[in-house]
Length: 387
Image (cartoon, rainbow, N blue to C red; front, side):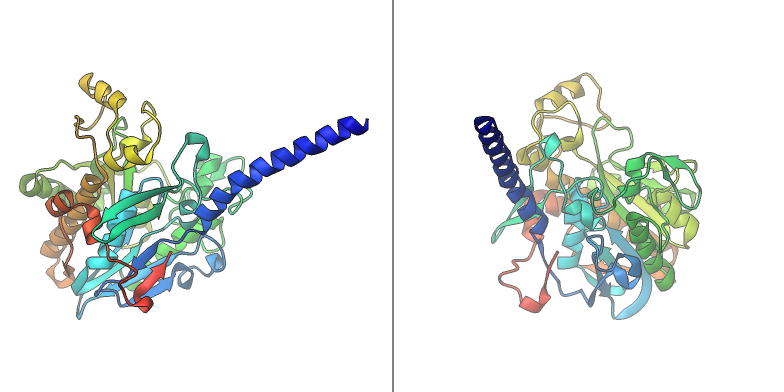
């Protein structure tokens, strides 16, 4: 009996040790902070809880960077990391924060919109915990996040998520997906309080344009595109045609479905005067029939299985030996955003948003996105925000 008890005790200690060792890496990942250098255009940094007090003190609270021009004009909000496992949008957002100078109008940038999900991961799918982007001064490290907020932080999940206010029935997990919880409410589940905060930014400040940055599988039909509702369709179409003609890449337009609720490109336009757009960049990393989910696949987008499927015309984007590298994905998103700004300013000159200092697609593909990140060690300490 004593021997059996000793065996069970030793086995229990061994299991506890293994769990502790595995938990250390996850704890470090959760605590890791990405340094963001406020560029010359940043005029204010404040938490989203200023607009949604219900997230104050929670892991869902996140930073909002404001870039105000010297001249009045229109206003735009850029939302990155709605799904933190789609990192091109995160990098594109930070690129604006660290480089953009607004000459007319105002930009609001939220680089880690689902902040809780950005500190979670998917070890069951073999996701890397981090990825490193080469720069002129070394390597900039980012957390690799999950699609949905951490379950313990939004606990308990309902059996069925009932969307507010339309009462459409959605999957239980959608309660932790901020792109199913728009327009939100101030006292709802945690992610509804996050989207409520963003809606309040738009409503209180009279924001003209909202851009939600995403990535989608190459096997998914809604990829490499701008998703827009009826009100935004003219600007989206002109932006799509212009980047194809002037910059040589495809980014077609998809219509926002009116019957599927909770999506940013639907609810923002229905519950505010803001014109919403969602930009999808192809991300081979998320496709199911790939090799291991490595950092290399995330960065270069090269996979032999997808190449084979491309030859059989099973993908919804062009795909060859060059893959879909991260620089290309970020470059497309940045250029499309700049073109949406330009088309909006042409249509409503009294609400012009004029931005300088931001590279376009060809520059980012040529130089690499890391060329445009500032060295936090060389920056003034007060200009560095740890996120």
